[in-house]
Amino acid sequence: MYEYLKGSITDVMPTHVVVEVGGIGYKLFTANPYRYALDAVVTIYVEQIVRENEISLYGFFDATEKMLFNKLLNVSGIGPKSGLAILANADHGSLIAAVESENVDYLVKFPGIGKKTAQQIVLDLKGKLEDIPGVKPDLFNEAMELPNDTQALNDALAALEALGYGKPDIKRVQKQLAKLPQTDTQSYLSEGLKLLVG
Image 1 (cartoon, rainbow, N blue to C red):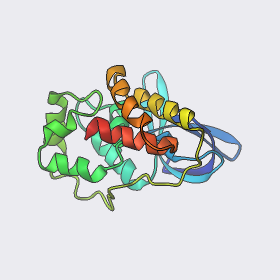
Image 2: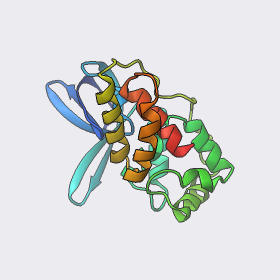
Image 3: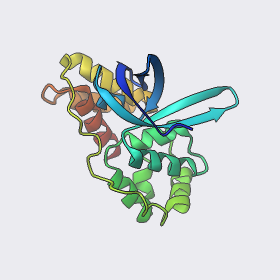
């Protein structure tokens, strides 16, 4: 029903952003909410998912990310939350390469993806991702406002938990992230995802 929304970001949370369009705030679940800055005017591609007891909107940085999300949803065992967790890693090129090379070990590093689901991803998507246009190694490199260092790290850790990573994994990367020079939430989150998946 919806293709995209163009409006102002009024709230950024670990699991979602709120975009105000024409005086209405839309809650959009996104793979990486911290790539969006408060009060920024953005165009976010949208997918509406209707279930028995809820209607949810999922937001995407561009049409390519939305296309990848929809392809992932076609895989048996992948729901919207798992799809977002996979897309949170900025390196979509590596995801496509892993599918094409049947690299199950890479795919099981995503939260909620076991060996059986990883094999299903390969089975269902191998050879079907060539039509994904313009996949770039760093899709989410928008400039962000630098918040307080501790708050930025805490927000990134909350986002990792919201994506489904377990507390032991988060604690493991927290120590490594704390050693980095002061940065923003987006950078902490990207680095944390690299450490967890890499």
